[in-house]
Length: 221
Image 1 (cartoon, rainbow, N blue to C red):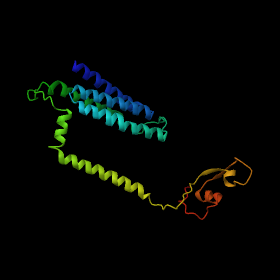
Image 2 (cartoon, rainbow, N blue to C red):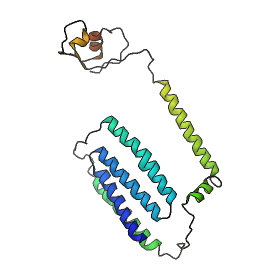
Image 3 (cartoon, rainbow, N blue to C red):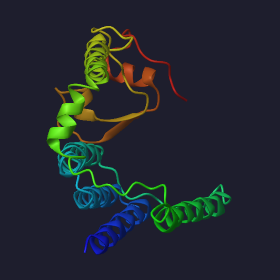
Image 4 (cartoon, rainbow, N blue to C red):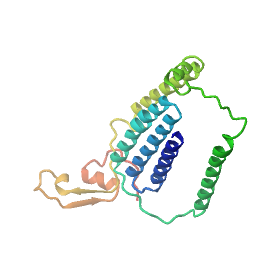
């Protein structure tokens, strides 16, 4: 029964992975990646590792994928345009690497399990929450604390860089190069007029807006 479940969830994971790579829409690709994470969590359950399965669903399929989908929808990424492949040699290389991966998988399934050196004892507490907690706070306490310090340093560094605000001062205004303004924007006292006035460089835009003396970026021709 466990072997059938393993084959089922492994097939689901492979199918979702292929769908993720083949999708042109990034949102559909992210949904396929969620399917991969859930299939892996089911595989962990069949391997008697419920804690890792729960972490897989909560952290990866939950928090991280919510962040990925939020960024995709925030950037409003559209379907990828199909373009001619530049490096055609990547196709045979990918097929060769996939064949090597399937060969290694077949070797592990058919030869490693039948090897006399493979241990046959069943350790029942491997993957359980109690055994993982005991290992983290006894044998692996120092690496666990070092990891937490590194994460804290990353958070503090990100906050410091965000507060620095880049190389420009707080009072510096940047006028983009190419813009199209409505006439009523340039002259609010005039009769409402939506006719467009184009500025092709930053200096032209500054002159139209009346901020010709303000600092500006280098004009992009």
